[in-house]
Amino acid sequence: MIYLLAIGGAFWQQWKTLGSGWNFAVGMVANVPIVAALAWVATQSNRSGVVGYAAIGLFLMTLWNQSQLGMRWSVYGEAYAGTLEFSLISRAPLMAFLVGKALAHALAAARPALAALIVALILAPEMPQVPNPSGLAISVLAATLGVLATAFIFAPLQVIAARQLDSVLSIRPFVIVLSGFLYPVSLLPAGVALVARIFPTSWAMDAVLLSLQGGASAEIIVDVLTALGLSVLYLLVTWGLFQLVEGRVRATGALIT
Amino acid sequence: MSAFSAPIRFGVLSFLSFKALSWDGVGNYVWGNLARPVFFVTMFALAGRFAGNPSAAEAYIVGMVASAHPATIMGGVLAMFTIERNFAILPILFATSGSRFVMIWSRGLIHMGSGWVSVAVSLFFAAVVLKLDLSRLDWITLLVATAVIGFSSTAFALCAGNFALILRQWTDLRTLLEGSVVAFTGAVIPLAALPGAVAAVGHVLPLTAGLVAFRAAFQGDPVEAVTMPLAQEAAIGIVYAVLGALLFLAIERQAKRMGSLDWEARA
Image: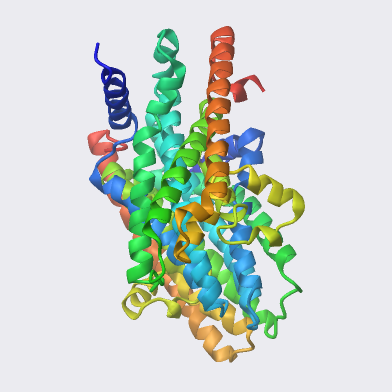
């Protein structure tokens, strides 16, 4: 119960800083130009499924981008402002507290992500055809879980590595290039495509494309299950990293090195 | 005092400002200024190829290489202004009697150089990995276009930096402005394909006019053939330089009167 209270409290505390004001207004429109540019590229295609793939990919890309970015900077900001310590006084684990904050960021990120989806669909010459709607639904769900799992792993990494990994963590395009949001990772050079397969979204987006192009359900299910398995693996690794972080933070008192 | 002392002092001020407010190690510099633009170029190149349009993908690559300049400068300058705001360095500057114009531009000089480096690295990557055709490239036109785009992009970023002084969140502002110079300048979407009002926005952004000259360089056009767009790009830069200085002075006056920089706290 105390965990739920900690998650709920952290969620509410974070949500209040994200819900309104200039940040909300700028955040809603911030991704629209780049989304419009990428959606326009997709609309120049005659291939089936490309526009639908790009629209869903842009939604997920924005969700990942904003969730990860918000999570990173809120931990940083609170650590520097000295407000993170008060949350640590509670008996709830650090992970519960940061899960609450991450959920708030994900929910806030869903707003510009939906805006991105709408922009992409407006630019589409016609509504994308979906030969396999149920396949698309489970593919998008698997991709969304993959997005959240890969965004959340950055929270303990930020606390563990902080400045040492700051440059790598800040390279959002690095993850976006490899996640398959904008094109199937099979388009990447062979070695790079292999690396991209560690991201659950690369599998889920293959399932999205298959669903849009009327691919076999069996292939879609294999891709979805692989994506779900990888997402669970990410969450387990995140949990393990939080154990390390919790131990270090309580022993050394250093939140950000 | 020699004739060189003012430029030397400006150079030293620029270097110290960059070192104190922006430098965060070689790794961060390489990832933020060199790798990041390369990823953006790759992203658009692959998206274009997935769309099944290789010739258009080549146009996206050239546009994205050019947009590496404003993108790099924007990130560096906005972060710098945010650090000045968050770590309370700005009130000390407000208390000095030094030239505000010099102070503002000292925040941009090194980032302008970083922008040139970003363009060079992105171009090298595009040529070697993405097989961008450089056979007809006129290097002089490319260098002049890059220099002028660098100036206007720096002026624009320094002007936009004023908003990072008064708003709490700078990253969304950066995303918005970076996205705008990609979407509304012709870097990816041709201006003719944009609705009239949006294209009008594009015409007041840096890069739009300079990009005409930048693209012409890849067709082998000499610099004399692109003097008009280069002049337009330089004029845009001058307008933003003046506007940025005026905005900074207005914010300074308001901050001194209100005792606070935070406009959101007043809302």
